[in-house]
Image (tube, rainbow, N blue to C red; front, top):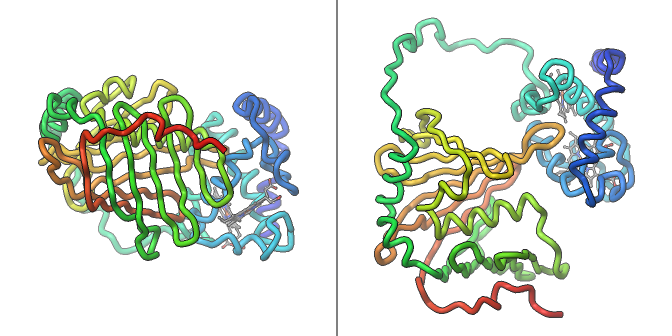
Length: 362
Ligand code: HEC
Ligand code: HEC
């Protein structure tokens, strides 16, 4: 097997991959304007040299989830820079192969990622699956119901939440709840939010409490290791979470393009899928329950050189708080981790000082 991989990698190199790497190297260099590269921050980087350093752990999480393994599948304890495991070296070859396939066959778009072949397993299947009678699937005359327009979907959503008028009257929210990470016991979490996009989340872990905030201009996160900047793409998600709290009636201002893409199912319920493009060009998908009109899922992905890093946010258990509805359960899923916030108490329109969202002075 090793031999085969070597040959494939060699093949890709011979077929112009030096060119691939100088070109993608330049592309990455543009993206990393002013930011450190992985090679500058970590000790033993051979293939991810030009990757923005802040993406290194994301690519590690993509690789782990794509193969369904832990970090120690490729790494030895104590030092991630060591090359003691054959799997780590194979992974390097796989990274080069994946980048090469995309370059040579997909015009440089990351269509193929580790997950395409591995699908959650270390050893991809090379045999076609058996069992399902695919030839009798009745999908020739799929009824093509007329799709609603974006405006119809958005209007129904806003109406289901209580209407634009009622939503506009909510200027602040103080939320108490719990956060559960994977199977761990829930811990306390508080959210302070002010229209249109100021938000402070305080999570009380057993050893330390972590605060993350956006004050309309700047963001910060403060935990056991002191204050740090929030990564750009995480900040984007944080801001979006905040704006979704207050501006569900203004999705057309948040996104520059919205299109109804089709119907799908989430937990056996039919949903309308809306493709959404942000002013930055980043794409998301919004899923609205066909029956209730409520937003049940938001999906976003950050591109990396080996494929997209996905984040999925599920909204459940909508309940009325005075004249509007909010989801009492929100679940964030990223590769290898899921955390859930369950609200226990919400107060609306209590005064919150703007200073609360500013980074505390040292
Ligand atoms: C499928 C194999 C694989 C898995 C799983 C994996 N890694 Fe890696 N990791 C690599 C490879 C390959 C490199 C070196 C990349 C390069 O040479 O550019 C690396 C490098 C690193 C580095 C940089 C070390 C240094 O100083 O040079 C860190 C940190 C790291 N991994 C952390 C993790 C963490 C945390 C996880 C689990 C979430 C993880 N890795 C899972 C293959 C893996
Ligand atoms: C085009 C398909 C394809 C893609 C894309 C792909 N792999 Fe693989 N990978 C394979 C095949 C096939 C094997 C050999 C499996 C076996 O030996 O059973 C393999 C083996 C591996 C192994 C060795 C497993 C072991 O137990 O020794 C690692 C590690 C690995 N891949 C990591 C990755 C990573 C990380 C990515 C993404 C950067 C990736 N692969 C992308 C097809 C692929």
